Image (tube, rainbow, N blue to C red; front, side, top):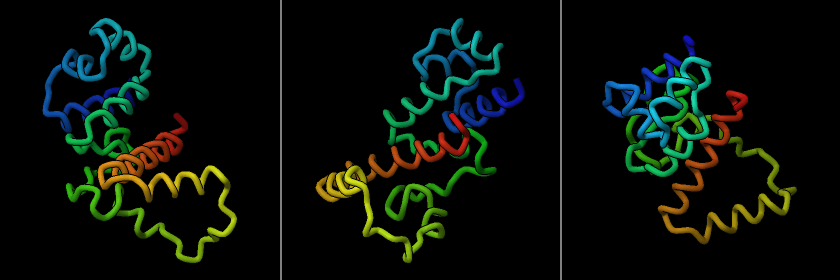
Length: 136
């Protein structure tokens, strides 16, 4: 249950709440369902991801909450990139001539989107990458 407790503590800290029942409510779970998940050491990552996506105004850092990074990100918004370290990962030499049809479609959708839509696409892609890093 150690991993569950660490995630829960970071989430409580990020949301400035104190009780498990408050977290359960944020995640759309009953207190009993949340306790059951806690007893099984099975954090409701799907509900957490949905909550983070539904509330971009809270600027929650899924990497930090899940324990992928040790400190919360700097609160700079998405003006640069969802995760500032992604700038370092950008490879200008990456081959982009052989994009799959889905990748081309994603770029087209991104370019047609408003700033808010672009931010949401980046945030969603980032969260999916984080979940993949955690094998979730």
